[in-house]
Amino acid sequence: MDTTFDTTSLKLKKEYPNAEDFLPLNGTDYVELYVGNAKQAAHFYKTAFGFQSVAYAGLETGMKDRVSYVIQQDKIRLVLTSPLTKDGPINDHINKHGDGVKNVALWVDDATKSWEETTKRGAQSTFEPKTIEDKNGKAVLSAIRTYGETNHIFVERTDYDGPFLPGYMKWECEYNPEPVGLKYIDHMVGNVGWNEMNKWVEFYAKVMGFAQLISFDDKDISTDYTALMSKVMTNGNGRIKFPINEPAEGKKKSQIEEYIDFYNGAGVQHIAVATDNIIDTVTKMRSRGVEFLRVPANYYDDVLDRVGEIDEDLEPLKELGILIDRDDEGYLLQLFTKPVGDRPTLFFEIIQRKGARSFGKGNFKALFEAIEREQELRGTL
Image (cartoon, rainbow, N blue to C red; front, top):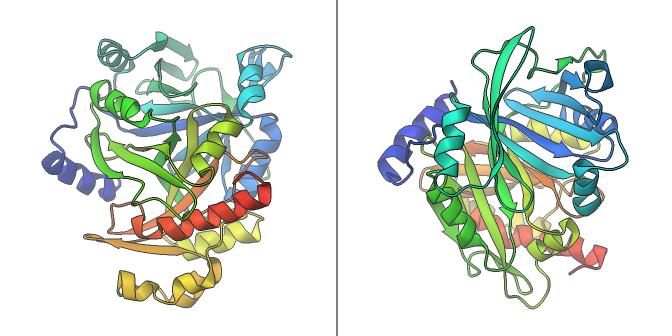
């Protein structure tokens, strides 16, 4: 087990006793995106992000209404799903939201108990616990609704030894570009509508036993034009962190409002993925065509005065546009991709933590100004 998680777990038990243990979570099992063309999306994430082929389900496995490609890099597993028929819920989701996250699956030891504990605390059930099996064993799944049309699926896979889940076959593919050094999902951010943040903060606290790790208001996260509010929720062992954003009043349309307009509701805004060497990771991703946000060059004029001494040379960080911030326990390096689809909705964050457990508060203004420049180009600011 990653010692980062163990250390975080011990700290959280001391510092956040309100994070209860009725819902033990081992980590993120997978993230499923509904996309317009799963085969091409898989090729993109393999080529640009360095994911590897893992499993497949479709007509060849007896699945008649959809096709899914499973790709993985270290502990990060994505499932890319497209419909095979002209009508249905997947089509509706893509038509309404574009490519986006539908299911955030959480790895648990007991999917039945996870469903019972959350639904009795007020969660709306997506589906009741069910056992699925094939020649490689069995798994138990259950699911609850969260913000927008996003689900949490509880995955119990103790008795399964196949490539992914029952109903999937191993995906043999000669094309598997080298990984770029992505390790695990650090956090996932949800955007919700006006005055809905506290509702979903309460949901994660009451229904899932999470505690509030940190909060930001419009004084922390604002520019001359736009603002937003955010609270970060974490489970007891610190392996799952969900910041929740809502818009705040500003002179112009914020990135949260833009997201909600184009996504047509609440949803996952970005997935933050960790690396042990952000310079190497970002260099490889840029060479493969991934586009990143850029802050002005003068950001680096006084950044070391603000964050203090760091291990890295500043020049390659400046060349790549990587941001730096520090908290009481260390510093972090982070960079954000541009939206990965046609709509200005889902994007990724690349993050390297050098002790810091925060989320880059010192970078918010520069980052949001970079986002506003993109919004201005799109005509949506």
